[in-house]
Image (cartoon, rainbow, N blue to C red; front, side, top):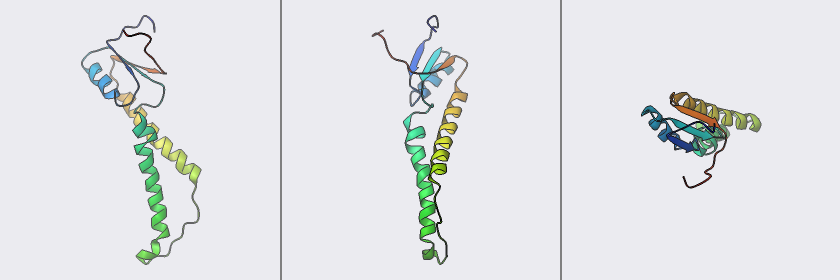
Length: 120
């Protein structure tokens, strides 16, 4: 990679990914460096997984309060491990793959971590 030349290097595949994509569409040679799933914290570890978990909790709450709706129902168990793995898989697969598929031919995705080594 030492002989590769880029017009723009983006460290981190979160919000700045949209900048990298726009620059690539404009014809710039772009390097995008990300060691974690693309999309950043919100879709992978924050907002999206939290909302998925809230959806599971709402179903459990509805079942527990079914009598309010003149229905008999009971919650016989919760498979926490399956809920956790489905939540992680749904968020990461959906976001990471969708972003990677939108990267243009003038951009290169490096799966790893980068750092600045000097001011220029």
